[in-house]
Length: 165
Ligand SMILES: NC(=O)c1ccc[n+]([C@@H]2O[C@H](COP(=O)([O-])OP(=O)(O)OC[C@H]3O[C@@H](n4cnc5c(N)ncnc54)[C@H](OP(=O)(O)O)[C@@H]3O)[C@@H](O)[C@H]2O)c1
Image (cartoon, rainbow, N blue to C red; front, side, top):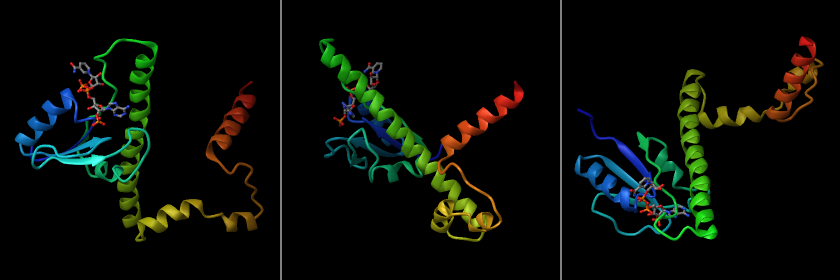
């Protein structure tokens, strides 16, 4: 039997969300609904604000959650005019990556905490040190041509491919 878990439900105010949040809550689980218009829901269910497009304080709810069920998106119960179709698509395309970023961020924080513990340091110091300029390597004559990883990776792949030809 599954013990109580925490579930975050973006768009949990809708038709499917109503069924899901009440069922989860009735089984003793912690439910947090993300909505653009947070208000009163059933007792025990928390209702937190978000805009469905950008990261915000709501993302802290995702950190430590056991599951996220994203139901956000403009209703499909309407006439399929070009404008309505665009809104249906945009609301799903914009909300999905931001939920993904919140999950990724939560995972990173969790991993960083363990990494910091293993290195006997502080999580904040560990994260900040990712941006430290490698002074000793510069002193030893190394040069860094790419400040960002995507450019460095592209350059690396090009070099490897040119050697293979
Ligand atoms: N109902 C079905 O039978 C069925 C079947 C197959 C698939 N689905 C899919 O399952 C999902 C949920 O369905 P549903 O019937 O529960 O939908 P719904 O009743 O329309 O509820 C969706 C929720 O998404 C939020 N939302 C609306 N526009 C948004 C926007 N622009 N940005 C962010 N959030 C927005 C709304 O919450 P707030 O206003 O509180 O922010 C709304 O309560 C949808 O993706 C739907 O296509 C549903």
